[in-house]
Length: 632
Image (cartoon, rainbow, N blue to C red):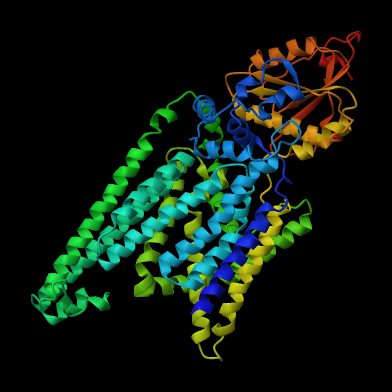
């Protein structure tokens, strides 16, 4: 027995070591993007409002909010989040203390330090999944498979290498699901839910909401799953009542049906006083215990509601609502109605498998796609078979049902918000963190059934070896997928300044002004990405680049007198010539720029994720032409 415990512990440590290696490998390989800059700036206690608008600024000025601020405390962090952003403060406060433990990268904050905290939380999720697997199914095989799948999941690795709060959110999702499973098991055993579990559930849920507001979708999904379980339980009791009535009150047939799922409860039950009570008295006691458990679940719900209502004033605070406009569903486009389905499928697939489908080589992309398709064609029938077994088995039916109901409810909420409210949550794969651990656990449990049953089948059965091979295939695919992500061949960033900067260096031998329209802090983050890459590139091709964030109230202006365009002309008039102007994500109409002409984009332009750009060459002031239309 002790040797088995040691083996289980050793296996868990192996999964933790593999998961840690994958999450911390090449942690700074990918360029930071605008959401990560928000984490860096606010966690340092700084503000985006320190970046000047409507004037040319240097790289150092643009990156100034990324410098450590020793005088800022957690109160300052909270203040800037309340006034400039739309996220709760818990993760940012933790990151504020965490980043103080590490040296800076020159005069700026270390990107490794910022990303190491979510990577650390990602590693913690591995033993967390082990605990959830054991708690739900009381099986070391399920627990080990769940830990291994979390360690190797490309989706989990992707989130762990983002300087964001999603891996901390996953920790709270795992903890909340643990409480949900315990509640369901007490309902199944007809025993009262301990007060300690109720208080822990409320605390975990409150921390989850304080980490990310979308954690509330986790809670809604849990609530729907519990309501479904309650309806099923009521229907089951109603059927048993009819059966008992048909068999006679207190008859043997009625007792057999009532206690069939609980062998330890059949027959007489001895009370603490030493007397024996009949099955009818026991039924009354267990029914009362069930009612008490439901009341305590309701208490957990009410406590969670109170913990969530605290953040309502924050949601109504002073942040810019345009920051969420990117999620708006375009109801006039047929493709926009179809995209959420495929985006959701992509998120599901990458929870288990992701080969280099984002490679620059078409041959590699096609090969990766074929291998992934073959993998899922081979694995899905086995997972389905294992899932059916879990549902049929009395000892796993309740837990499997409530976890599957939770996942389906979460997915239904995603589609309801997308198609009814017009906010396409599926555009952000990262938001699927709200139910990701439950998917991992259900797949792990199904694979555990296949693994265990394959040993019990006859040697000549074709299922005996195939089942084990499928489990090994899932592990190998997970490892290859993790390697794909950490080498930037999968789950690449939404913004790729590392591709844009070499283009600027190659096309611009002159001094450079990089201009964009500014609407929210998102655009500031986009420019910070370019500035960060220029700084790290350390190239002499671009000397002292200048940046312009031309503010306009609307996201896109198509009028002839856009404020951002006027600001661009005024700034250009004050700058020395000759000069190259790079309009990057410039969402305003650009008419004539004096003594400037647009470069033929076919000579230099390639697609860069997150950045649309146009190069203008502005000649010396003594050039005789007067507008772009008169220039070559």
